[in-house]
Every structure is written in structure tokens, then in C-alpha cells.
Length: 139
Image 1 (tube, helix red, strand yellow):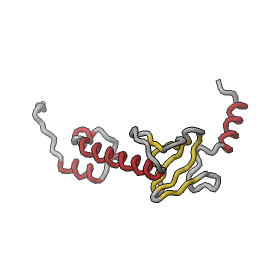
Image 2 (cartoon, one colour):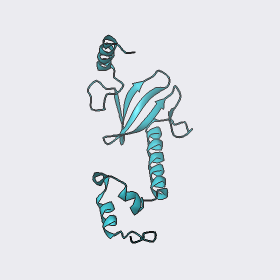
Image 3 (cartoon, helix red, strand yellow):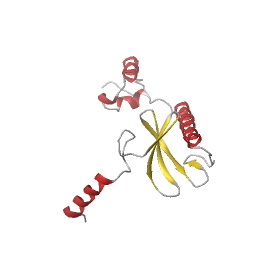
Image 4 (tube, one colour):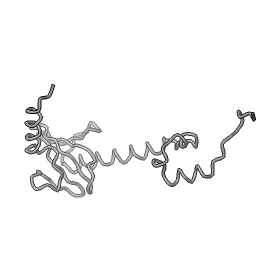
């Protein structure tokens, strides 16, 4: 059970915690490498860094004593930029593969979605949709 005192204590600790600082925060430890920003999260060996590309976080890389690594492959990189690029390339390929294997929802599945959740393309598909009335019987 969490007491109000422990909750206040935890909230005050969050103010001094630097783990979730964005790369734009003046208190964040940021390394800029070509095309990426690394924000130190914590750890001694390995040191953990969040990797940002433009303004979006793409993942985490790790600085070991002798090399850098990321969480998506088993390679060891000499430079942090190589680990960041390896992470970025993996995510790009994964996104392409996911898009290629994903099937768009059927019109019947679209009818089950909330109206506000439909995209304009899905609305256009539903406008052209004519349900099959094979099993309907006039009363």
C-alpha cells in the first residue's frame, strides 16, 4: 500500500531524476553525432543512451568499455554513430516488412470501428462498399 507520504517522497525524487529528460533540457547529458542525439540515461558499464533522430526517440544504445551496441543485433560497434545507424536501419527495415505483411482491414471490420477512428481513406472505402446479402431473407 502506498501512503501519501511515500507518494510525495517519490514525486520529489522524480524532480531530481535525470532519466527522462528530453534532449532539449539544459540538464540533460547530450552527445550530438551526425544525424542523431544521444541522451544519457544511466548505468556505469554499459552506459545507456536514448537515441533521437530529429525530434523522435528511435531506441537505446549502450556504451561498453571496448565497444558500443544496440538492442536489436549482436554486433559490436567501434563508434556510437555506427550503433545508432544500425538501430535506425533495423527499425526502417522492420517497418517496411511490417507494412508489406499487414493486410488492410476488411469493410466489415471497418464497420465495427468507431466513426472518429476511421481515416479518410477508410471512409472512401466504406462509401463504395456494398454488403453481400446472401443470407438475408425477407420477412
